[in-house]
Image (tube, rainbow, N blue to C red):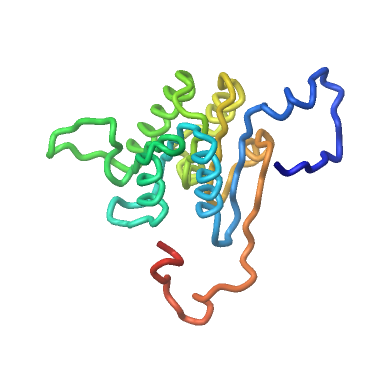
Length: 201
């Protein structure tokens, strides 16, 4: 196990072991590629530890095929690591039953997704939550940033949460224990090359 040494040891009365088991809130933001990819890499580590994982994709269409989705679902069903529950807003969320005629706006769907995340956090359903592209509903004003910060700050147990997407709000960044900003130095699209199978999906 890596034995990195922290640069600061706070005078909080906690032991090293107690600090090591505190829940982490991570934010992957910025204009560069790799925010979701890094979050799904973290999910692989969580799976290996036997943790139950909940993935909530807040923006991606149901038509978009995400390579990590199939891989993590197969792993989750293998009984060799943790379980994986995968929910897509573009599919209307897996826990809601609607009539075929019901039309739901993206804003309503995002709010429904956040309400489910709140229920799962309260019930301690998962050990790791991947809230993929969740910064956008906050940026667009569909989900209240202050409520998100409050819920995450007060969540019970040792539940880790990673949030991805551009335009992460300042209060969310202040709350987070880990913030990574992806910056673009160079990208194939700069040379007119579109996304590739196995690289983007």
